[in-house]
Image (cartoon, rainbow, N blue to C red; front, side, top):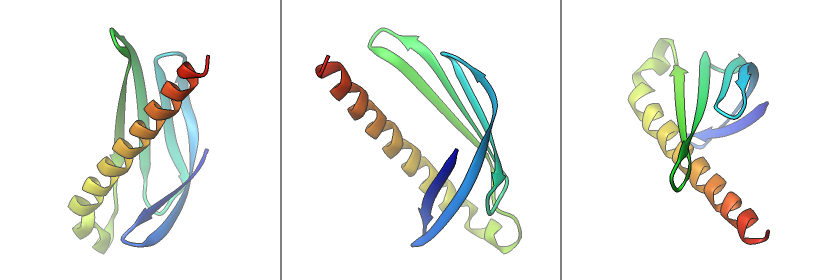
Length: 98
């Protein structure tokens, strides 16, 4: 999977390889081409109101960029939250159109 992110106004492209896929509960990916090591795990579990999604991102910058790690962490959390809100909107629209 190829993704593009933006951090401090800079475009960051990266490629993730699926390391494990156990539908419908797990998707685990590892960066194969990225400016820093990254391991992303998505988990899904049934919830009375739908599906509970969990995301864990491991890895981070090295060298001088390590100083920006706290800022990057907040940016990643914000981006993931936005992605989940977008996914929820899309799924809700699909359900409404059925």
